[in-house]
Image (cartoon, rainbow, N blue to C red; front, side, top):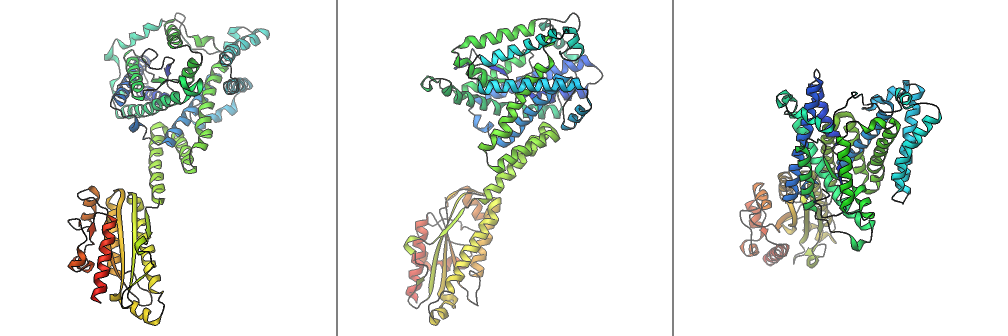
Length: 579
């Protein structure tokens, strides 16, 4: 990634977002192959390497075909809940590394209460180091501050051990140093490839099954989303890291393709760990103006760690390694459980917490499915609250009620629909039309200025209420909303706007702004709202007025609201002349 990136300071590393799903892949293999550790180990390595390769290929095509926007359709609160769980996982792993006690689910924390004092001292040491590292990372601006602290902590530990008169072996026996349990003659790094040489000994049923495929798909989604966030973070952070005028332009799709190729190559080399840009190391490299040298140096040092025939962690205090893991957990949980609150709504924050709890209780896949379903429900609910119907009197017919020659009343209302009309809003649309139009009709009929006018208003043939329903700003509509509109329009026409003290009125509906042969037009026609064609010019007044359409059982449809108003005006004039 360092060599191929257009950012000369880019650094790629193992990514945290895929950690849990890779762990789940390994756990599934271990559960299926319990009686043969060698087969379980080889199968786990192949499974994770294959998943990494598949994710890399998928990422390459995401960047190649400019699909990065689709990957980010996963709701941010759901990703936040998942990342919060990663933070919890790192925190639990830190406590496990510092004490040697397996901490996984929330219930497993209870066992710490029964542990001896030395275990609590190890936990305290890990927490103190984690908080010290956290404080250094947040408040020390000098770029050498954090590296110096990371080097000083193990040195201080060994100084304390020797000052108290203990040896390294004593510290290891009391659980203060990590012990990998390796053999006296550990193999060289490349000897791990011997496990790949006999594919017939692998447990293929543990690799190719529904659970592993589902986890691999989930791994691709979260790594893709995480990689998009990493690139965006580097793009946002580089401008603040130095003079903004010296910031490099980030080619989003190119970087995604590069991440994909890097993961595919890593998978082919047998490395089962997905990776991406590491924001902190990339920005640190930029601040030091190290260019590609920094990334190359990291690559060489990590390659040496892989090759040398011993585990360097055997030389590290458990509380130190556990403290670093706990630091990662604190940082991640702080970002996605605390700091995220200022960036999302209350409902979205509740969704973050719900996804986090669901992941704790039902695992990664179960938690993300539950979070996604809850996110969809929240979207439907919030969208249903959006006002999609605006009802008003047209400006050129702005008088509340127009009088014909014999005192008959005429009222006109325009209903502007907009946005997405879907099933979540069908009830709201129907209620709004009934409440606003019918109540207005009743109020106006009860607003007679004299007994003569009231008597005229009670004659339904002398009271007309025109409703223009405009679809010009409607982006889409589903069948449920179309059916609700159909029922409402028919109810308006049949009820005449309701009754109040025996007063009824005739309601005429005009549809406007529907593009012919569009999906909206087809749905409205299928539900009996539209005629088979759209009128280009309002000629209904010369052909019997809107009463002609009323007898056909269909409202007229015109191409624009302006034509709808002209159609209503013509009908009012025609009816007035007849009187």
